[in-house]
Length: 219
Length: 219
DNA sequence: TTATTTTGTTAGTATAATCTAACTTGTTAG
DNA sequence: CTAACAAGTTAGATTATACTAACAAAATAA
Image 1 (tube, rainbow over the protein chains, first blue to last red):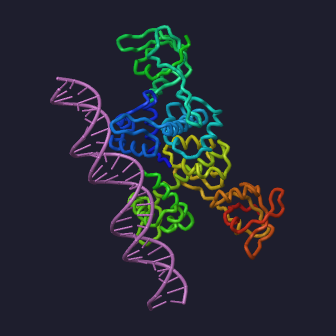
Image 2 (image 1 turned 90 degrees about the vertical axis):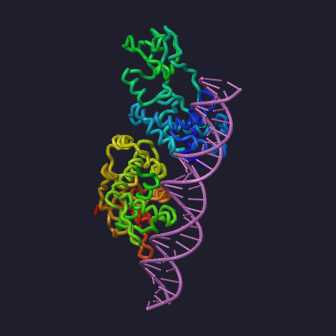
Image 3 (image 1 turned 45 degrees about the vertical axis):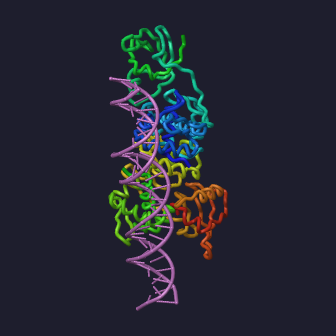
C-alpha cells in the first residue's frame, strides 16, 4: 500500500523531473515545504519500494514503476479538475485545492465513472494532458509564448505551471484556452510581449506570464 | 484542526450514541476494529479538545460541539452518497466505501455545490436523514417493520443499519425505498413476516431483515 | 586552488496513532 | 457474597512522518 504522503512525494518528483528527467532533494524540499532531511529519508524509503532511483549525493530519478504510479495520481487529479469544471460548474481557478484531496481517493470505479461521464477527455481545464489508465501521457509539442516571434499567430493551449493568482489574472484579461493571439511587439528590455486577441488590440503580457503560457503556432 | 482519524471516532460515537445517548469504549473498539487502549486514549484526547465527556469507568457521551462536528461529517457522507447515486449513476449498494473517503474532504464549496446540484435533499439513498449545515438532523418518526401488526400497510422509508449484503438482498427482492408493503402474517416462532408488494403476493422476510427496515404506516 | 556557500546526509528528537502485556475496576453467576 | 469474567486503564513499544543540530560532500567564488 502506498500512503497519501508517499503519493505527494511521487507527484512532486514527477512534476519536477518532467523536463530534465531528474530532480534534487532541495527542489522537492522547496516544492513541498518539507525540510531536506525528511525528504532525504522519504527518498530512501521510496527507493526501497522500487519507485525511485536513489544514490547518495546524486540527483533523483523515478523508476518506470514510480513514473506510472505518479502519472496515475496526476490522472486522478486532472480528471477531477475536469469533472469539477464541466459537471459541477466550478471555475478553473477554484478546482486545484479540491482535486489535490480527491486525487488520493482509492476507488477505481469512481474515477472510471468520472472519465466516462466526461467522455474520456485528454486534457484538463488548464490544458494539461490527462495520462491514460496505464499512466501514459500523450505529450503535445506546444511551445511557450515567450519563445515566439513578432508576427506569429498562436492559440493558447495550456498554462503551466498554473497558480490560482495567474489564472485569476488571465480571467481578468479574458484570456482563455483556445484564444488566438497575434504577437505585435516584443520589448527587448524586459521581454514583455504585446498581443492582440478577440476585441483587444494591444495587451501587454510580462515575461513572467508568457513563460507559463503554452501555445500552438498557427502561422 | 481535526484529523481524519479523529473524525472517524466522532462519527462512530455519534452513531453508537444515537439511540441510547451514550456508548462504551468496548463498543467503539468493536465497531472500528481498534483495540480498547487505543480507543481509550483517543477518547481522552477528544475530551481535551472538548468533543467528548470522558470520566474514568463511565460511559462516553458527545458534547454539544462533538455532536455538531459528527453530524457535519455525516452530512458530508450522506450528501456524497446521494450525489453518487443521483448524479453519477452508482447503485445504492456501491456508494458507501467511496463516501467513507470523500466525507473527509475539506472544502465547504465542494459540498455546498453538491447540495445545490441535488436540490437540497433531506434524506440519503438509504432513507437516512441528512443533517443540515448546522449539524441539525431532522428526526423522522419512522418505526421498524418488526414492530408492525398484521393488516398494517406501510411504506419503506429507510434501511438502518445498511450493509452492502443487505442492500443487495433487498435489490434481489425488488424492495426499494418508497415501496408499499402489506403485512399478511407474522410467524410467532421466528418473528418472520409475510408481506405483499408490487406484483409479489407473499414474500417472507426474516426478523433479521425486518429489524433494519424503517417504515411509515399508511393504515 | 583554496575558502566559502550550498546541498546532502546522519543522528537524535517529537507527535500521532497504533499495538501488547499487565493491572484495576465493575459485573455477574454460583 | 465471593470468585470469575468482562470492561476499562496504564505503561511501554512500534511505525510513519515530521523536525533540529551537526557533519560531509559538492559546487562556486575569490
